[in-house]
Length: 124
Image (tube, rainbow, N blue to C red):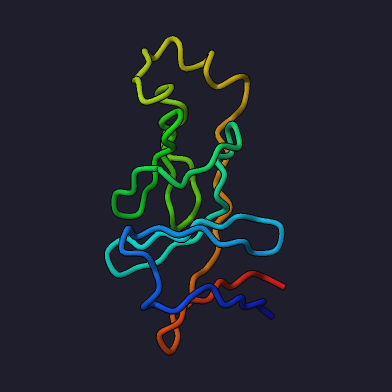
């Protein structure tokens, strides 16, 4: 059984295409790309920094702090630590910025649109 949480009405969702909601103990970033909504814990798994200002392209989001790219649908890490503070780093220095951490996925949630409202679904 799933646990459904009301987030907002479609008419109230920001035109910027992004909004953060508190769901339980987690800040959840909801992103609208095209006609699809995606929901992720608003925290990069590398340093725990927010993804709110991350660049969204189709089904991907890029961390604004160190350039890691993630699939919004699955949470899969597609590219790990490509830069720092917006500056692309050489391949040899990427290991230093990784700080010994392996690529980790984002935590993703299903978004349900029903009767003009957005809901977040979590496994019970």
